[in-house]
Image (tube, rainbow, N blue to C red; front, side, top):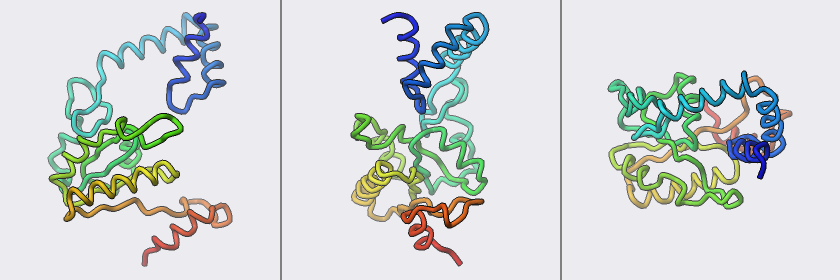
Length: 196
């Protein structure tokens, strides 16, 4: 495999980067080796040396701050655990300003098409963290694989901890969107999850 194909193959392993995008990025990096490629290589090397996964939630944190600042914050609610698929979801939920509990990143979902199964999830660590909680909020995405993952987690958690309250994010119409653009499943969930 030549260097360009090897670079494209490496880039295609990143989430959200398809084969064609990876090929375009590889060509761009190869054409600009002294500026862009050097900056990307330096940033990757710095990230490799200085960043790690938080030992508690799985979020990305500096190696010098492990557990991360959210896990180390004594003001956060220790009775509720928000479970997300990906560490990037933690930052999105934090921006809402509505959640003040603890976090846990699964690092994926059950996805047979992508070859991701239960062994790829941090299930033992989740069960350990859930032992001290009163509520687990499953803040997973709203696709078929995420729904299956949430259903499985709900079953496992309820069996192990019958007293545990297990919740899901309310799903509905996005802010700024029209009902006309909502699919029937989303609209049905919005109706079922209506509030006064």
